[in-house]
Length: 234
Length: 234
Image (cartoon, rainbow over all chains, first blue to last red; front, side, top):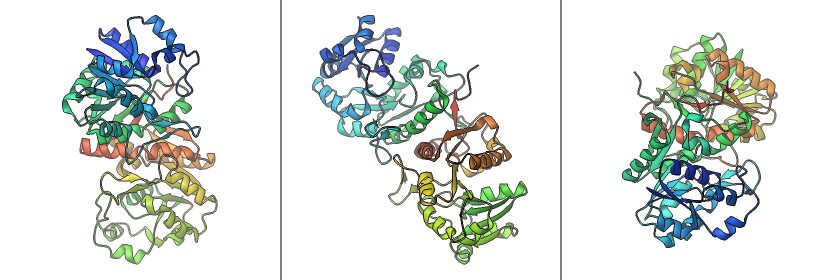
C-alpha cells in the first residue's frame, strides 16, 4: 500500500518507519519541503525532535512532498499534523484530490498558546475528527491511535499487559482497512475497541488531558489506557 | 466516622450503604426532605432509580436532612449531587458550616439539556472539582471515584483485573483521609493514582464522554479505566 503521511513531527516519522518496515511505500507531506528541510530547531511544542533533515537523510527512500502532491500519491492518508493546523493542511492537500480516500486521523487539537496545560479546541461538543469529516465529506475519516505516544502506536508491546486502541468513523470499510493496519502493527484483535461513528471521536480526544497529567506524574510515556471489563464476561 | 452524603440518587445511596456496612454513621442531605420523600418517579437523568422513599424505608438508621443540617452533622462530606446543581447544593449546605471539612467530590457536570450525548460543563479549561474548590475555599475538596459506576466505586472487585481510581486535590491530609476510605472500600494501594492538585480534576472528568460511549458499546457498566504501564518498570 502507498501511504501519504501529512506532518513531519515525531508521530509522522514514527508511523513512516513502521510502515516502511512492513514493506509499504511512504511519502511525507508538508507545506513547503524546502522550509521543512532547512529547519535546524526542534518544534516549539510537543516532544522535542531532531531536525527533519537528519531523519530524511537516514530515510532517502521517503519522498518529502508538498501536501497536495503527497495526497495525490497516497492511497491511504495519515493525519499526523498538529491538530490545530490539520484543516489548513488538508485544505492544501485537497488540491491533490482527496475523494474517497481513507484518512487515518491521529492528531489531537491541543492549543498550547495559553501555556500548560494545553487545552483541547475543539472539544466536548465537537472534535477534530468530526471537524475534519464535516469539512472534507469526500474523505473517509477514521480516528485512532491519538491516545498514546507514537512509539506505542506502532509497537503496542512497549506497554506490558493488555491495553486498547480506539476506532471512530462513519465508514465501515475504512474502519476495516485501519483495523488491518493496526493488526499489522501488533495490536491484538481484542485490543481494538470500535466506539462507533466519527462523533465518538470526542471521547478519545478528551483523554488527552489525563494522558498529559499521567505523563507528568509517571515521568515516562510508555503507558496506555486499558478498559478493564470490556471483554465479554465468562 | 460520620459522613454526610449530599444527594439522594443511586451514587449517594450506594456509597451510603457501603459506609454503613463499614460501621460508619451516615446522614443524607437533600434540598427538602419532604419533597424527596414524596417523589414516586425515577429521576429524569442518569440511571433509573426506585423512589428514594423505598430506599429510606429499608435504611431507617439513615437520617434524611436538609443540606445545611446534613453538612453540620457530617465530619466528612460526599458530593453525590448532580454535577450541574452541586454549587447550589453546597451553597445551601454552607449554612451548616463547611469550614475545614473534607469534601469528596464524586459528581460529574453532565448537561443533559441538549439530549444525548450529554456535554460536560464546565470542562477543558475548568472542572467541577476546581469550581467547587474555588467557590468554597473553606472546603478541602478531593475529586475521586467519578470515573466509574457506583457499584464499582464501593466494590472494585466487580471488575476483574487491575484498574484505577484517580485522586485530585490541593490538601494532602484530605487526600490521605480519602485514600484510607478507598482502601476500606477494597481498592488496592497500587490502584490509587494521585494526579496532583485539584486542577487535575479536569482529566478524570473528561473521561466521562468515552465512559458513556463504552457503556453504550459494551451494554453494561461493570468496566473501568486501567492505566497500563503506570506501575514502575521492573
